[in-house]
Image (cartoon, rainbow, N blue to C red):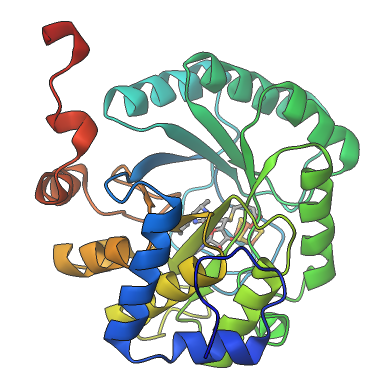
Length: 328
Ligand code: SAM
Ligand code: DTB
Ligand code: SF4
C-alpha cells in the first residue's frame, strides 16, 4: 500500500498523492493524525497574525485576488505602504494577544529597491526585536534583496504556488509558474524558510490539488510552512461566484499535505471564517498546526478573535492553561 508512514520523502508521484487523498475519510484522518504526532506536539497550534502593509493596485491578474488592479469592480481602498513604526506597534499588539509570528503582505508584483524596501527591512528588524517570528510576502524578488531580508533576520518568505502547474494558466497569466519557482529558489539560497502553499476551491480537480502537493513535496527540503487556503470568493473578482468548498474537502487537503510533508507546519489559512468550530478542530486533528489569528486576513474578514477564544478554549491550549511561571 502507500508508504505514508511519516518518513520524509521527496519522490511522491501524483498518482500516489491522489491515492492518499482519496483514502476512506476516517482512514485518511487517522493516518494523518498518527504522522502528525510523530513529528509535532499534538497540542500545539501556532498563531500567526497577518497585516496588509500595502493594499491593492497590484499589476498581476490573479483571478482570486481582491488586490489586483485588473479587477476594477472590487470594493477596496488602495493604501500606500504603511509606516514601519505603525506596523511594529501592531505586531506588539498581536504578540500581546498571543501571536508568535507576524506576517506582512504587500500587493506588489515584485520587490523594488528604494525607500519602500528599506522600510520593509525596518519592519522585519522591528518585529524580530519583539521576539516574534517575521514573515513577509512581497511578490518576486532578486538575490540581493533576499540577502538583505536574511540579514534583517527574516524567518520566512511566503510565496504560494497557488495551484497545480496544469491549472495555473486559468488563474494567472501575468507571471509564470517558473517565475514562482525561481523566487522560491532565490529565497532558499539565503537560508530563509519557505512558506509555500496554495488555494483550493478555484475550480481545480482533485488531481490538480495532488499535483500542487507533488511540486511542494518534491522540494528538498520541504517548505517549512505550507498554507492551505480555501478560496474566499470576493465580489468583483472573476472567482466571485465560485461556491464555497465542502469543509471536509479542506480536511482531506490538510491531511494529505500532512502525510506527504510530515515535518512541515501546515497552516489552516484563508477560509477559516466559513468553518464552524468542529470543522476547524477536524483540520487540527488531520494535521494542521497553525492558523492565521486576528480579525482580518489581508483584506477580508478572518475568524474573529472572540470565536478563536472559544476554539482555543475547546482544545485546551497548554501554554495558557499551565500556571504562569510568575505565579508558581
Ligand atoms: N503579492 C504577493 C504574492 O502574490 O506573492 C503577496 C500577497 S498575496 C495576497 C498572498 C497569497 O494570498 C496568494 O498567493 C494567495 O494564495 C492568497 N490569497 C489571495 N487572495 C485570496 C482569496 N481570495 N482566497 C484565498 N487565498 C487568497
Ligand atoms: C497565505 O497563504 N494566505 C494569506 C497569507 N498567505 C499572506 C493571505 C490570505 C488572503 C486572503 C484574501 C485577503 O484577505 O485579501
Ligand atoms: Fe497581486 Fe499577490 Fe494579489 Fe496576485 S495575489 S494580485 S500578486 S497581491
